Image 1: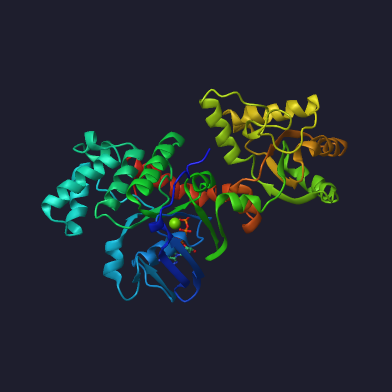
Image 2 (image 1 turned 180 degrees about the vertical axis):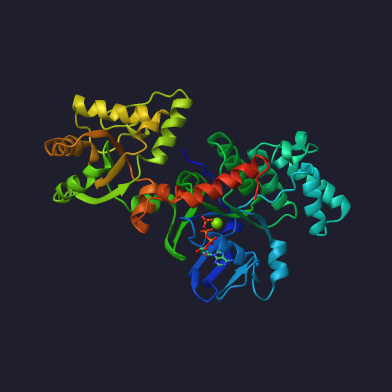
Length: 419
Ligand SMILES: Nc1ncnc2c1ncn2[C@@H]1O[C@H](COP(=O)(O)OP(=O)(O)OP(=O)(O)O)[C@@H](O)[C@H]1O
Ligand SMILES: [Mg+2]
């Protein structure tokens, strides 16, 4: 699956954003953004991938001139963010992380209000509103109150609003936060269309590795305010040579026992403890299931020896291992709940398919019960883990983060929240 079938014309080679040693220190002590430098080409979609508090929103806010930088410099569309803030603001659109629509107004009224703020003349404003409503396919709901919109419709309206003044650059801060997978995909398609048809340069922030992988030409991984990786998704993944074998244990406590045994094997390049399974693979599997495609046993629908897209070698998989792989797949098929407490060890190995029998034997001889075995090519989740030492799915799952996301989702759904 790829969403990056964009052909780049000559006009796309210029750097529309140029950031040098950008730094933000809050209250003299919190180094939210710590000397980051990067450029964005005109027409590019650049993804900021990072855990909570990494500095993504702070970076966007500085580039959008909403927050004053502490050190460094940046230009947006050729304008310096400190010296020419007005010109920067005219060049950008911003869809904020937290929803900011007026729920008591209609979609059209929300857009109209924004157009007035930007000083668009009536005729131009009305034309643009129609144009943008069409772009995000909300024309037929334009005169309904926003509180009657679905979460995805609201996000689309916010994107339309961000584009009303025809900005060269669009900042999307977590564009699909809290949306269901289907709505998320429809937003992705809108983002792609905007980029391709209107040549809008886009910086988006996300916690969803699959979103960054699908949409972005390059991904900037940010952690503790610093850039820890910046490259195309395929090059990032290619850094991790080999296959990832995920061992899911019924009892997380056994990990301490099994890990040293695995560490003795020189063909295992790295070992990481993660929450469970692999989200990208889960997603591609679910997509395949939805499309009614035939799916092989194992993660991502492929195991060695099954088809031309296999990972690792073509070794014969023992029945016992096949059963475990199949079990892993059943879990992907919506029955993961019972695995909630399960912990997983991710092993990076050459020829993962060939090594599985050996790994299973080792675990078995140690008297440890495996819940399932999963095999996949390195994904952005694995890349994230290797450069930050943390599992992005754990980062999404903290209590504070869940509470915050719950609030945003509730707002997106238009329910009344107390406090
Ligand atoms: N106004 C502020 N005053 C003090 N600290 C702040 C302020 N805004 C952000 N921070 C801190 O700066 C750091 C970076 O925050 P930021 O909002 O940029 O993170 P983020 O990567 O967008 O995270 P998330 O994924 O949760 O949205 C965090 O430690 C945050 O607490
Ligand atoms: Mg943020």
